[in-house]
View 1 (tube, helix red, strand yellow):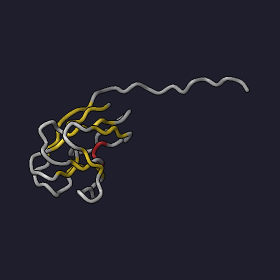
View 2 (view 1 turned 120 degrees about the horizontal axis):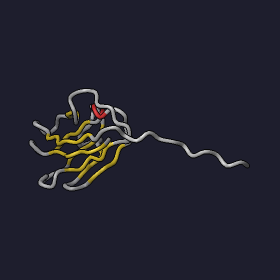
View 3 (view 1 turned 60 degrees about the vertical axis):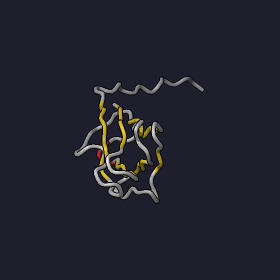
View 4 (view 1 turned 135 degrees about the vertical axis):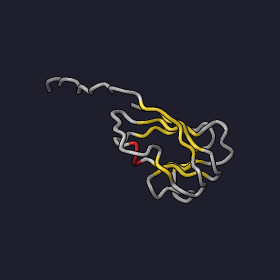
Length: 101
């Protein structure tokens, strides 16, 4: 069997980062307001000061179906559009920080 050339993946062209807090606990909110292209994914981290859970998922995310993050917990998602990622919280004003490219 002949060796194959390695797959060449283009490097990301920019860093995307921010913070998102949920105004009304129990209501799913998108991380960003509009389409945001990601080339290599996003890391989402629950804020250090959170006192309760954050739930990560799609527009229907909530306490009964979301991926649970405690304070300082993180998750990495391979996703192309950051606007499709939503969070919900148990407590008003709590949330996440995120960074990706």
